[in-house]
Length: 320
Image 1: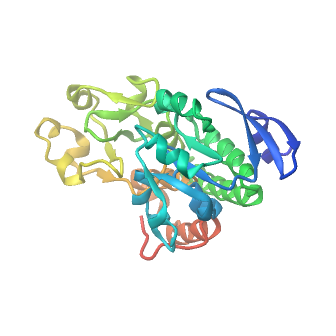
Image 2: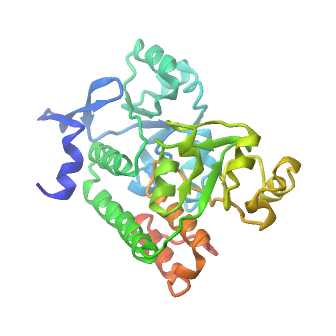
């Protein structure tokens, strides 16, 4: 079976024609859902926030997670953004407003199960995946692209992601000792664990994620003492964290940590983990951790090709 077709095998249950297009049945977190395609109106909240920019479907987006308005690729050359309803991912928006917008589908994370179940009582249709691995990101991007008739575009996108991961693997293949890292979120002691997109991204970057020892799924709190005892080589900070690099460098309780003493603390560039730029974030981590291994790699050229092929533009002055 062709590699791209395999992406559909876990999720696509059945396809059948109707008067207007094709109805697709998809297995998601809640079971089997059916959707008429092509989708004409969509709301996206809590996950896959760069999907409209990747697929070029801004004219179909009627509601969008408020965080998505802060993502750089969503702001560039986008006349639609100011007219899109902002959604709070914790509440999934005002139900009366959502019903007024009349979306064909709401793509949402699984963090708001209660709100999703409430919305379903009003006939709203949701598509929600649990996503812990980058392979799942690629599979789910493919499924969502099929809802909008954009399967060819997502083939190109996944190909670009795979190119980045191959570059990382090639450049880091001779590393004998992996750098030990932690990835901080909205609090310095909330870090990424084993089964998570960020955790997988750190594995692709050939680093050792300290959080895997303490957290099985997603992210969670650990004690500051644990971070001190583990003594990470590098600290990465979530791009939406309220903490800056300088803030972390000046936490008194962390002053003995190697990453602090050596000023190896970095704030991540803007990205959505459930999007194609998770590959670029892995490249950012690998290049930061192993700069000598990438000194002959033309990162600017790699970034330019990726952005042009995935988004159709290259952000001005974008650099790692």
